Image (cartoon, rainbow, N blue to C red; front, side):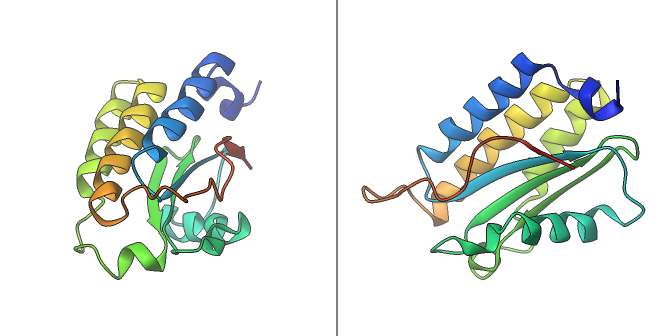
Length: 145
């Protein structure tokens, strides 16, 4: 088995997908998780590439968020689209990132992502509250590379 396959069980993946659905109930923001084995690139640079390859920039309000995990390198990055970056403070993702990294350090991979996703949803709600006509613009499933 690859390290990517060992990173989360199938049940844990489903809990993360459910956390995305829960977080998105309070915000028009769109959250995705991407997990891959290895990259030679810096995590933020790779996360930005994955963001574009998943067409996350195609949301109506440009409010997509990607949680990127590079398993072998122990890389983690959060990337928000330009609609978010235009309205939030520069350190907007720090509290979410800190939650995720703290749990990763304790080998609590599922908890890291679930708690981070829920925190991101709460933070996004401030700037992008859920609207009655909101639709789920991006899949909630975890992508893998």
